[in-house]
Length: 291
Ligand code: CAA
Image 1 (tube, rainbow, N blue to C red):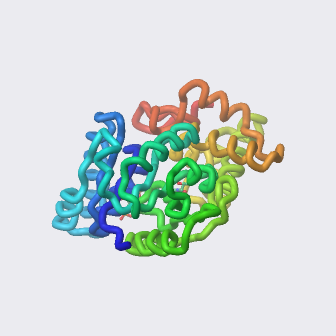
Image 2: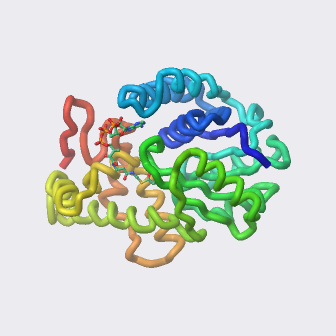
Image 3: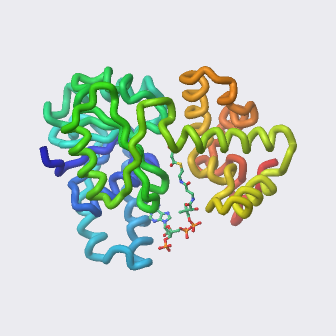
């Protein structure tokens, strides 16, 4: 089946990015979010991010206008009924995702492929909450989606070859590079990245270095574009914690124990850039370390 219309569930930073690049690749896109404010902000953000690409001559102004006109929004799942591929990019919470997939199964046409952008949760388990596990797949984008080249593809136990091939063609059309991962907790990128971020939080917690020292050390010492604590704020500390929890529960190894300091920041609601405070305070002109 040729994929023409993409449904994106969740108007957070990942959903916005997925909608953005899908529209540029000429797909019709509908973004669904229960919060109407989020939908309005999503369009504003996509407009802003596309303008960055116009400014740096990656796309033309015409392409931006055409792509924006391909994106619609809706607060209800029912408007996704004619999508060929629906990508769920809701909060990283298994109960929420499962509920969405149960509802979606009753709405979308029977040929449609369902995908999750989950960064850590079992694809096989999510697939089991749908009426079509053979048409279910993990398609995991990296943040910021328009910039990062990689997409992880994860088959569930029942995923069919047709579903894999159709999803692969879609990702190729987005001009992304694919890494295939088996369906194990947190897949490849986060299996390696999150323990590093968690270890950076422990390095801070144990007083080995300050926030600035840790980030400078890793940026300049290993040529990472961002230090691990800066990157954690960028990803969202709640997301980092929930991925560590999935690793800890799923692999039952104490090496994945979430750092108590990371837990404390999340409990405080200091979730990083999206709440204006995390390891850094973003309320002023320059980010200031919070410890
Ligand atoms: N949309 C479009 N373009 C964007 C963009 C966006 N959202 N964000 C950045 N850009 C563009 C900028 O316009 C700029 O383009 P030009 O070079 O053409 O001018 C370019 O990207 C670089 O951006 P900036 O100059 O603003 O800033 P920078 O050089 O500091 O780069 C960064 C920003 C690309 C985010 C870089 O710091 C980086 O690569 N950081 C690491 C990101 C990373 O590791 N992401 C993966 C996180 S893990 C994940 O996502 C998985 C998960 O499940 C948690």
